[in-house]
Image (tube, rainbow, N blue to C red; front, side, top):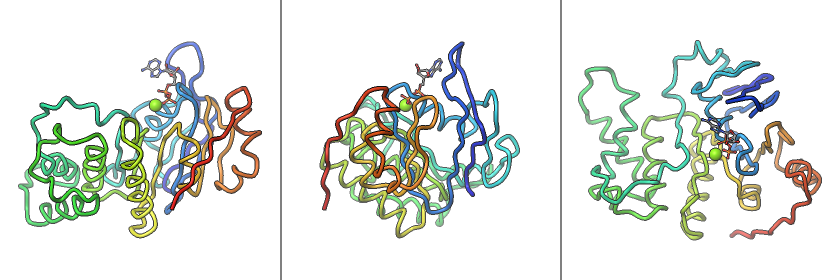
Length: 249
Ligand code: ADP
Ligand code: MG
């Protein structure tokens, strides 16, 4: 078990934002977390990553209580709105990806041959090698997004958390992006947790799903969700939901 939430509740103010969340993420999962805007998706991620402390319940990472956990480099995180840069942002693509190595290095570690190799490999994986010397701010949203994935991968994580990664990315780039995540999951053994409000797309990509609106409305195999999706979504949104069908390949 990589990540576990046991009866976790949280509030920013009077109203409970997360209520009694039970969640398990195991190695190899490609987990989607869906829910309406304001349903607590980003809050849940922050909780799992130890950025917020639960009011009730406990979070475990690799079996350790989150406050005892020390192996943070195992976790990659691309926060929401990572691509909201202005075009003058003065770092190159290579430097942005290299920044993802820093958590793996000792205090006095100079950039060595191994680090350079990893950065180059990560750029290759996301198809951004030829942009290495360009300023990140000059790239499209989809390209920037791939650079941030490469940055997270440069830390050699075992699990990658992505919060609404396709907002502001055009349809064609999104397709490439999901294929990249599938490849990392299937072929590299990376565990992937993907937050989105695009239910139709997500359910075609992931193998497990969490439906969240303050509390959990579903947690399990995506097949189990599809068998009952009309009912689950109606409960989660509080009204019937018309699903838009998406087709791939
Ligand atoms: P989602 O990611 O699903 O859109 P969030 O986790 O960002 O939802 O937010 C859940 C709820 O908590 C929303 O009502 C939001 O307004 C509120 N919220 C989020 N962050 C804060 C904060 N820092 N302080 C107070 N309320 C917040
Ligand atoms: Mg959010």
